[in-house]
Length: 434
Image 1 (tube, rainbow, N blue to C red):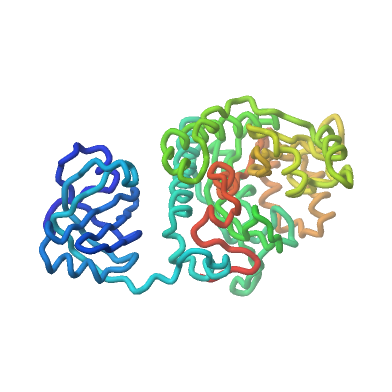
Image 2: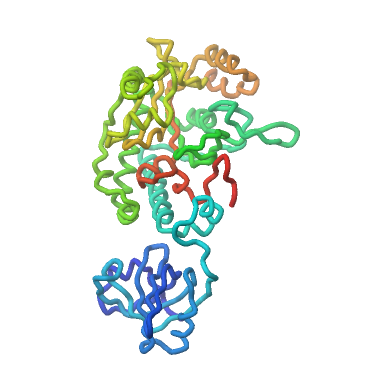
Protein backbone atom coordinates (compact mmCIF):
# COMPACT_ATOMS: atom_id res chain seq x y z
CA UNK A 1 0.00 0.00 0.00
CA UNK A 2 3.06 2.25 0.14
CA UNK A 3 2.40 3.74 3.58
CA UNK A 4 3.58 3.55 7.17
CA UNK A 5 1.79 0.81 9.07
CA UNK A 6 0.37 0.95 12.59
CA UNK A 7 0.09 -1.85 15.11
CA UNK A 8 -3.30 -3.20 16.12
CA UNK A 9 -2.85 -1.83 19.64
CA UNK A 10 -2.60 1.70 18.17
CA UNK A 11 -6.27 1.51 17.16
CA UNK A 12 -7.29 1.60 20.82
CA UNK A 13 -5.22 4.66 21.79
CA UNK A 14 -5.65 6.88 18.71
CA UNK A 15 -8.54 9.31 18.22
CA UNK A 16 -11.82 8.29 16.64
CA UNK A 17 -11.83 9.18 12.97
CA UNK A 18 -8.05 8.89 12.58
CA UNK A 19 -6.70 7.05 9.55
CA UNK A 20 -4.73 3.89 10.26
CA UNK A 21 -3.00 1.29 8.10
CA UNK A 22 -2.75 -2.23 9.46
CA UNK A 23 -1.32 -5.53 8.34
CA UNK A 24 -1.67 -8.97 9.81
CA UNK A 25 -3.60 -12.20 9.52
CA UNK A 26 -7.27 -13.06 9.37
CA UNK A 27 -8.20 -14.49 12.76
CA UNK A 28 -11.88 -14.80 11.88
CA UNK A 29 -13.90 -13.72 8.87
CA UNK A 30 -17.66 -13.36 8.36
CA UNK A 31 -19.28 -12.42 5.06
CA UNK A 32 -22.83 -11.11 4.85
CA UNK A 33 -24.18 -9.45 1.72
CA UNK A 34 -22.13 -6.39 0.88
CA UNK A 35 -20.21 -6.50 4.19
CA UNK A 36 -17.18 -8.48 5.31
CA UNK A 37 -16.21 -8.50 8.99
CA UNK A 38 -12.57 -9.43 9.59
CA UNK A 39 -11.05 -9.99 13.00
CA UNK A 40 -7.47 -9.02 12.23
CA UNK A 41 -4.56 -10.11 14.40
CA UNK A 42 -0.97 -9.08 14.73
CA UNK A 43 1.48 -9.64 17.57
CA UNK A 44 -0.11 -6.83 19.61
CA UNK A 45 -3.73 -7.99 19.58
CA UNK A 46 -7.01 -8.26 17.69
CA UNK A 47 -9.22 -5.65 16.04
CA UNK A 48 -12.41 -5.85 14.01
CA UNK A 49 -12.23 -4.49 10.48
CA UNK A 50 -15.46 -3.73 8.61
CA UNK A 51 -15.18 -3.87 4.82
CA UNK A 52 -18.17 -2.40 2.93
CA UNK A 53 -18.45 -3.12 -0.80
CA UNK A 54 -19.49 0.52 -1.38
CA UNK A 55 -16.42 1.95 0.42
CA UNK A 56 -13.53 0.00 -1.14
CA UNK A 57 -12.59 -0.66 -4.77
CA UNK A 58 -14.68 -3.52 -6.17
CA UNK A 59 -11.73 -5.71 -7.13
CA UNK A 60 -10.34 -5.42 -3.59
CA UNK A 61 -13.66 -6.45 -2.05
CA UNK A 62 -13.90 -9.42 -4.46
CA UNK A 63 -10.36 -10.48 -3.57
CA UNK A 64 -11.11 -10.37 0.16
CA UNK A 65 -14.25 -12.47 -0.33
CA UNK A 66 -11.99 -15.39 -1.33
CA UNK A 67 -9.80 -15.08 1.77
CA UNK A 68 -9.92 -17.74 4.49
CA UNK A 69 -8.69 -17.77 8.08
CA UNK A 70 -4.91 -17.08 8.36
CA UNK A 71 -4.74 -15.24 5.04
CA UNK A 72 -2.34 -12.30 5.27
CA UNK A 73 -3.82 -8.89 4.45
CA UNK A 74 -3.20 -5.16 4.57
CA UNK A 75 -5.97 -2.71 5.45
CA UNK A 76 -6.32 1.04 5.68
CA UNK A 77 -9.32 2.87 7.07
CA UNK A 78 -10.80 5.04 9.81
CA UNK A 79 -11.09 4.26 13.51
CA UNK A 80 -14.67 4.12 14.79
CA UNK A 81 -16.18 3.60 18.24
CA UNK A 82 -18.31 0.45 18.40
CA UNK A 83 -19.38 -1.01 21.74
CA UNK A 84 -20.12 -4.43 20.23
CA UNK A 85 -16.66 -4.77 18.72
CA UNK A 86 -13.79 -6.38 20.69
CA UNK A 87 -12.17 -3.61 22.70
CA UNK A 88 -14.96 -1.15 21.81
CA UNK A 89 -13.42 0.00 18.53
CA UNK A 90 -13.22 -1.11 14.92
CA UNK A 91 -11.69 0.04 11.64
CA UNK A 92 -13.88 0.90 8.64
CA UNK A 93 -11.78 -0.01 5.63
CA UNK A 94 -11.19 2.22 2.61
CA UNK A 95 -8.57 -0.04 1.03
CA UNK A 96 -7.73 -3.72 1.44
CA UNK A 97 -4.99 -5.84 -0.08
CA UNK A 98 -4.66 -9.63 0.19
CA UNK A 99 -0.95 -10.47 0.55
CA UNK A 100 -1.38 -14.25 0.54
CA UNK A 101 -4.31 -16.64 0.52
CA UNK A 102 -4.28 -19.34 3.16
CA UNK A 103 -5.55 -22.82 2.49
CA UNK A 104 -8.37 -24.08 4.70
CA UNK A 105 -6.92 -24.00 8.22
CA UNK A 106 -6.79 -27.54 9.64
CA UNK A 107 -7.36 -26.52 13.27
CA UNK A 108 -10.86 -25.90 14.54
CA UNK A 109 -12.91 -26.41 17.70
CA UNK A 110 -12.92 -29.64 19.75
CA UNK A 111 -9.91 -31.38 18.23
CA UNK A 112 -7.87 -33.89 20.23
CA UNK A 113 -4.80 -32.89 22.20
CA UNK A 114 -2.66 -35.26 20.12
CA UNK A 115 -3.84 -33.59 16.91
CA UNK A 116 -3.02 -30.17 18.34
CA UNK A 117 0.44 -31.37 19.37
CA UNK A 118 1.07 -32.88 15.94
CA UNK A 119 0.14 -29.48 14.49
CA UNK A 120 1.88 -27.45 17.14
CA UNK A 121 3.56 -25.27 14.49
CA UNK A 122 0.07 -23.96 13.68
CA UNK A 123 -1.56 -24.25 17.11
CA UNK A 124 0.96 -21.78 18.60
CA UNK A 125 -1.09 -19.09 16.83
CA UNK A 126 -3.93 -19.66 19.31
CA UNK A 127 -4.60 -16.78 21.70
CA UNK A 128 -3.97 -19.02 24.71
CA UNK A 129 -0.42 -19.86 23.70
CA UNK A 130 0.29 -16.41 22.26
CA UNK A 131 -0.56 -14.70 25.56
CA UNK A 132 1.33 -17.28 27.63
CA UNK A 133 4.37 -16.72 25.42
CA UNK A 134 4.18 -12.97 26.01
CA UNK A 135 4.01 -13.51 29.77
CA UNK A 136 6.98 -15.89 29.65
CA UNK A 137 8.99 -13.26 27.79
CA UNK A 138 8.13 -10.73 30.49
CA UNK A 139 9.19 -13.22 33.19
CA UNK A 140 12.61 -13.59 31.56
CA UNK A 141 13.00 -9.85 31.09
CA UNK A 142 12.09 -9.11 34.71
CA UNK A 143 14.37 -11.86 36.04
CA UNK A 144 17.35 -10.49 34.11
CA UNK A 145 16.51 -6.98 35.28
CA UNK A 146 16.38 -7.95 38.97
CA UNK A 147 19.57 -10.00 38.76
CA UNK A 148 21.46 -7.21 37.01
CA UNK A 149 20.31 -4.65 39.58
CA UNK A 150 21.61 -6.96 42.32
CA UNK A 151 25.03 -7.34 40.67
CA UNK A 152 24.59 -10.85 39.30
CA UNK A 153 26.56 -11.30 36.09
CA UNK A 154 25.07 -13.35 33.27
CA UNK A 155 27.47 -16.01 32.02
CA UNK A 156 27.28 -18.84 29.51
CA UNK A 157 27.69 -22.48 30.42
CA UNK A 158 28.03 -25.63 28.28
CA UNK A 159 25.04 -27.85 27.65
CA UNK A 160 27.29 -30.79 26.75
CA UNK A 161 28.91 -32.18 29.88
CA UNK A 162 30.91 -35.19 31.09
CA UNK A 163 29.34 -34.96 34.55
CA UNK A 164 26.02 -35.67 36.20
CA UNK A 165 24.39 -33.20 38.56
CA UNK A 166 20.89 -34.43 39.33
CA UNK A 167 21.36 -38.17 38.92
CA UNK A 168 22.58 -40.69 36.35
CA UNK A 169 19.18 -42.30 35.80
CA UNK A 170 17.81 -39.14 34.20
CA UNK A 171 20.71 -38.37 31.84
CA UNK A 172 20.48 -38.23 28.06
CA UNK A 173 23.71 -39.94 26.96
CA UNK A 174 25.24 -39.40 23.54
CA UNK A 175 28.36 -40.34 21.59
CA UNK A 176 30.95 -37.59 21.72
CA UNK A 177 33.60 -38.37 19.14
CA UNK A 178 35.62 -41.18 20.80
CA UNK A 179 33.89 -40.91 24.16
CA UNK A 180 30.60 -40.22 25.92
CA UNK A 181 28.90 -36.99 26.91
CA UNK A 182 25.53 -35.98 28.32
CA UNK A 183 22.96 -33.30 27.63
CA UNK A 184 23.12 -30.90 30.55
CA UNK A 185 20.76 -31.29 33.47
CA UNK A 186 22.07 -28.21 35.20
CA UNK A 187 24.78 -25.57 34.79
CA UNK A 188 25.37 -25.53 38.54
CA UNK A 189 28.87 -26.99 38.63
CA UNK A 190 30.10 -24.52 36.02
CA UNK A 191 28.42 -21.63 37.82
CA UNK A 192 30.21 -22.65 41.00
CA UNK A 193 33.51 -22.34 39.12
CA UNK A 194 32.57 -18.90 37.81
CA UNK A 195 31.46 -17.46 41.13
CA UNK A 196 35.06 -17.42 42.41
CA UNK A 197 36.19 -14.68 39.99
CA UNK A 198 32.74 -13.02 39.71
CA UNK A 199 31.02 -13.74 43.08
CA UNK A 200 27.42 -13.54 41.78
CA UNK A 201 26.60 -15.33 38.54
CA UNK A 202 23.61 -16.70 36.66
CA UNK A 203 22.80 -18.34 33.37
CA UNK A 204 19.72 -19.22 31.34
CA UNK A 205 20.07 -22.48 29.45
CA UNK A 206 18.01 -25.43 28.31
CA UNK A 207 18.21 -28.43 30.62
CA UNK A 208 17.34 -32.01 29.79
CA UNK A 209 15.91 -34.70 32.08
CA UNK A 210 15.31 -38.25 30.84
CA UNK A 211 12.44 -38.73 33.29
CA UNK A 212 9.48 -40.78 32.10
CA UNK A 213 7.18 -38.52 34.08
CA UNK A 214 3.87 -37.83 32.38
CA UNK A 215 2.48 -35.12 34.60
CA UNK A 216 1.13 -31.63 34.06
CA UNK A 217 4.38 -30.12 35.35
CA UNK A 218 7.15 -32.15 33.67
CA UNK A 219 9.06 -31.53 30.45
CA UNK A 220 12.13 -33.39 29.22
CA UNK A 221 13.58 -30.09 27.92
CA UNK A 222 12.97 -26.89 29.83
CA UNK A 223 14.31 -23.35 30.28
CA UNK A 224 16.52 -23.24 33.34
CA UNK A 225 17.49 -20.06 35.18
CA UNK A 226 20.27 -20.87 37.63
CA UNK A 227 22.33 -18.69 39.95
CA UNK A 228 25.22 -19.07 42.39
CA UNK A 229 26.25 -16.57 45.03
CA UNK A 230 29.48 -16.39 47.05
CA UNK A 231 29.33 -15.67 50.79
CA UNK A 232 25.72 -16.91 50.93
CA UNK A 233 24.19 -19.52 53.23
CA UNK A 234 20.83 -21.28 52.88
CA UNK A 235 18.97 -18.40 54.56
CA UNK A 236 20.48 -15.80 52.22
CA UNK A 237 19.76 -18.13 49.31
CA UNK A 238 16.04 -18.15 50.13
CA UNK A 239 16.01 -14.38 50.52
CA UNK A 240 17.50 -13.92 47.06
CA UNK A 241 14.88 -16.21 45.53
CA UNK A 242 11.86 -14.66 47.21
CA UNK A 243 12.86 -11.11 46.40
CA UNK A 244 13.40 -11.96 42.74
CA UNK A 245 10.11 -13.89 42.44
CA UNK A 246 8.14 -11.04 44.05
CA UNK A 247 9.76 -8.58 41.64
CA UNK A 248 8.92 -10.78 38.65
CA UNK A 249 5.29 -11.07 39.78
CA UNK A 250 4.93 -7.31 40.12
CA UNK A 251 6.54 -6.58 36.75
CA UNK A 252 4.43 -9.15 34.95
CA UNK A 253 1.27 -7.78 36.57
CA UNK A 254 2.11 -4.28 35.37
CA UNK A 255 3.55 -5.02 31.94
CA UNK A 256 1.51 -8.03 30.80
CA UNK A 257 -1.85 -7.12 32.27
CA UNK A 258 -3.92 -7.81 29.16
CA UNK A 259 -2.25 -11.16 28.57
CA UNK A 260 -2.92 -12.20 32.17
CA UNK A 261 -6.59 -11.24 31.92
CA UNK A 262 -6.90 -13.19 28.68
CA UNK A 263 -5.49 -16.24 30.48
CA UNK A 264 -7.77 -15.87 33.51
CA UNK A 265 -5.21 -14.53 35.99
CA UNK A 266 -6.18 -11.43 37.98
CA UNK A 267 -3.05 -9.21 37.90
CA UNK A 268 -3.92 -7.93 41.38
CA UNK A 269 -3.13 -11.35 42.89
CA UNK A 270 0.43 -11.00 41.60
CA UNK A 271 0.78 -7.43 42.87
CA UNK A 272 -0.13 -8.75 46.31
CA UNK A 273 2.85 -11.14 46.39
CA UNK A 274 5.11 -9.75 49.10
CA UNK A 275 8.19 -10.93 50.98
CA UNK A 276 9.14 -12.62 53.21
CA UNK A 277 7.51 -15.86 52.03
CA UNK A 278 6.26 -18.45 54.49
CA UNK A 279 9.00 -20.94 55.44
CA UNK A 280 8.16 -24.45 56.70
CA UNK A 281 10.61 -27.13 57.77
CA UNK A 282 10.45 -30.49 56.05
CA UNK A 283 9.52 -32.07 59.39
CA UNK A 284 6.49 -29.80 59.83
CA UNK A 285 5.44 -30.30 56.22
CA UNK A 286 5.70 -34.08 56.64
CA UNK A 287 3.43 -33.94 59.69
CA UNK A 288 0.87 -31.90 57.77
CA UNK A 289 0.92 -34.40 54.90
CA UNK A 290 0.55 -37.34 57.25
CA UNK A 291 -2.63 -35.73 58.57
CA UNK A 292 -4.09 -34.64 55.23
CA UNK A 293 -3.30 -37.53 52.90
CA UNK A 294 -5.64 -40.49 52.92
CA UNK A 295 -2.83 -43.02 53.28
CA UNK A 296 -0.51 -40.78 55.30
CA UNK A 297 3.05 -39.85 54.39
CA UNK A 298 6.27 -41.81 54.81
CA UNK A 299 8.82 -39.60 56.53
CA UNK A 300 12.09 -39.42 54.63
CA UNK A 301 10.58 -39.43 51.16
CA UNK A 302 10.81 -36.48 48.82
CA UNK A 303 7.61 -34.65 47.93
CA UNK A 304 5.94 -35.40 44.60
CA UNK A 305 3.15 -33.66 42.74
CA UNK A 306 0.41 -34.92 45.10
CA UNK A 307 2.27 -33.84 48.23
CA UNK A 308 3.17 -30.41 46.85
CA UNK A 309 -0.37 -29.80 45.66
CA UNK A 310 -1.69 -30.75 49.10
CA UNK A 311 0.71 -28.34 50.82
CA UNK A 312 0.01 -25.38 48.52
CA UNK A 313 -3.62 -25.74 47.44
CA UNK A 314 -4.88 -23.16 49.95
CA UNK A 315 -1.86 -20.86 49.78
CA UNK A 316 -1.97 -17.52 47.95
CA UNK A 317 1.80 -16.83 48.12
CA UNK A 318 4.77 -19.10 47.36
CA UNK A 319 6.16 -21.04 50.33
CA UNK A 320 9.54 -22.56 51.15
CA UNK A 321 10.05 -26.09 52.44
CA UNK A 322 13.56 -26.32 53.89
CA UNK A 323 16.04 -28.66 55.56
CA UNK A 324 15.08 -31.95 53.92
CA UNK A 325 16.53 -35.24 55.19
CA UNK A 326 19.45 -36.73 53.25
CA UNK A 327 17.18 -39.62 52.24
CA UNK A 328 14.96 -37.17 50.32
CA UNK A 329 17.72 -35.03 48.79
CA UNK A 330 20.71 -37.16 47.86
CA UNK A 331 22.53 -34.66 45.62
CA UNK A 332 26.24 -34.88 46.44
CA UNK A 333 26.75 -31.11 46.48
CA UNK A 334 24.20 -30.18 49.19
CA UNK A 335 25.75 -29.10 52.48
CA UNK A 336 25.08 -31.29 55.51
CA UNK A 337 23.29 -29.48 58.34
CA UNK A 338 25.99 -28.70 60.95
CA UNK A 339 23.64 -29.52 63.84
CA UNK A 340 21.88 -32.54 62.33
CA UNK A 341 23.84 -34.73 59.93
CA UNK A 342 20.62 -36.47 58.83
CA UNK A 343 19.55 -33.27 57.03
CA UNK A 344 20.89 -30.99 54.32
CA UNK A 345 20.75 -27.20 54.07
CA UNK A 346 18.40 -26.93 51.13
CA UNK A 347 15.02 -25.47 50.23
CA UNK A 348 12.34 -25.91 47.58
CA UNK A 349 10.15 -22.96 46.66
CA UNK A 350 6.59 -24.09 45.94
CA UNK A 351 4.12 -21.99 43.97
CA UNK A 352 0.69 -21.49 45.58
CA UNK A 353 -2.72 -22.73 44.40
CA UNK A 354 -1.48 -26.29 44.05
CA UNK A 355 1.12 -25.64 41.33
CA UNK A 356 4.06 -27.01 43.32
CA UNK A 357 7.84 -26.68 43.03
CA UNK A 358 9.31 -23.90 40.90
CA UNK A 359 12.79 -23.55 42.45
CA UNK A 360 15.21 -25.96 44.07
CA UNK A 361 18.23 -24.60 45.91
CA UNK A 362 20.80 -25.32 48.59
CA UNK A 363 23.92 -24.22 50.34
CA UNK A 364 26.83 -26.04 48.70
CA UNK A 365 29.09 -28.52 50.46
CA UNK A 366 32.72 -27.39 50.82
CA UNK A 367 34.19 -30.42 52.61
CA UNK A 368 36.33 -32.33 50.07
CA UNK A 369 36.44 -35.75 51.83
CA UNK A 370 32.65 -35.66 52.25
CA UNK A 371 32.12 -34.73 48.60
CA UNK A 372 34.40 -37.58 47.51
CA UNK A 373 32.58 -40.05 49.75
CA UNK A 374 29.21 -39.07 48.31
CA UNK A 375 30.44 -39.33 44.74
CA UNK A 376 31.92 -42.78 45.41
CA UNK A 377 28.66 -43.89 47.06
CA UNK A 378 26.80 -42.87 43.91
CA UNK A 379 29.21 -44.86 41.74
CA UNK A 380 30.91 -41.86 40.18
CA UNK A 381 34.52 -41.76 38.97
CA UNK A 382 36.29 -39.18 41.14
CA UNK A 383 38.63 -38.32 38.25
CA UNK A 384 35.68 -36.80 36.38
CA UNK A 385 35.17 -34.37 39.26
CA UNK A 386 38.75 -33.38 40.05
CA UNK A 387 38.16 -29.99 38.44
CA UNK A 388 35.13 -29.48 40.68
CA UNK A 389 37.08 -30.49 43.81
CA UNK A 390 39.75 -27.97 42.83
CA UNK A 391 37.20 -25.26 43.55
CA UNK A 392 37.40 -26.31 47.20
CA UNK A 393 41.20 -26.56 47.17
CA UNK A 394 41.88 -23.03 45.96
CA UNK A 395 40.10 -20.33 47.90
CA UNK A 396 36.84 -22.03 48.88
CA UNK A 397 34.17 -19.86 50.48
CA UNK A 398 30.62 -20.49 51.72
CA UNK A 399 28.24 -20.27 48.79
CA UNK A 400 24.75 -21.25 47.71
CA UNK A 401 22.66 -21.43 44.57
CA UNK A 402 19.36 -22.38 43.00
CA UNK A 403 17.64 -23.39 39.79
CA UNK A 404 14.30 -22.04 38.57
CA UNK A 405 12.16 -23.79 35.98
CA UNK A 406 10.87 -20.92 33.83
CA UNK A 407 8.01 -22.95 32.38
CA UNK A 408 6.87 -23.98 35.86
CA UNK A 409 6.84 -20.37 36.98
CA UNK A 410 4.95 -19.38 33.83
CA UNK A 411 2.45 -22.17 34.37
CA UNK A 412 1.54 -20.80 37.80
CA UNK A 413 1.51 -17.13 36.79
CA UNK A 414 -0.59 -17.85 33.68
CA UNK A 415 -2.87 -20.36 35.44
CA UNK A 416 -2.10 -22.97 32.79
CA UNK A 417 -3.58 -26.42 33.19
CA UNK A 418 -0.54 -28.08 31.61
CA UNK A 419 3.11 -27.03 31.44
CA UNK A 420 3.30 -27.82 27.73
CA UNK A 421 1.43 -24.57 27.02
CA UNK A 422 4.27 -22.63 28.64
CA UNK A 423 6.62 -23.49 25.76
CA UNK A 424 6.08 -23.34 21.99
CA UNK A 425 7.33 -26.83 21.17
CA UNK A 426 7.08 -29.07 24.26
CA UNK A 427 9.32 -32.10 24.64
CA UNK A 428 7.92 -34.99 26.65
CA UNK A 429 8.69 -38.74 26.82
CA UNK A 430 6.25 -39.30 23.95
CA UNK A 431 6.71 -36.09 22.01
CA UNK A 432 9.69 -34.84 19.97
CA UNK A 433 7.73 -33.75 16.81
CA UNK A 434 7.52 -31.20 15.36
